[in-house]
Length: 117
Image (tube, rainbow, N blue to C red; front, side):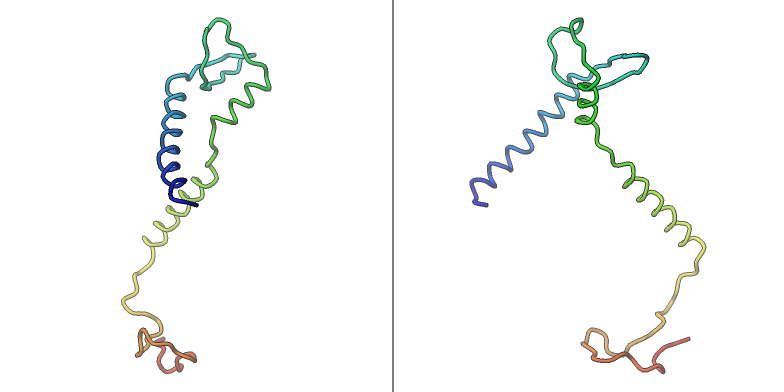
């Protein structure tokens, strides 16, 4: 990509994000349809004349919702598991196999006598 395109994107993308965030903050409203409360955001003129069909509500919900629950749950469970494991394990003071030539390229595995059991 040329430098003009990169400069344009460096300005355009943050401005687009700020406009999107501003629209969500400014135009968030609630609909109660058949006993279900639906919260979404988009610009509208008159509040009393503002209605959506079922397909429109579903589309607005999908546009304004980002689902990261699986990733967040996995990261949370992983951190808890790491904390539990580190709590109940004894930290090692030395490595299992010690090598005398650190940082060199070895063509074979170290001999068995170099390993500490």
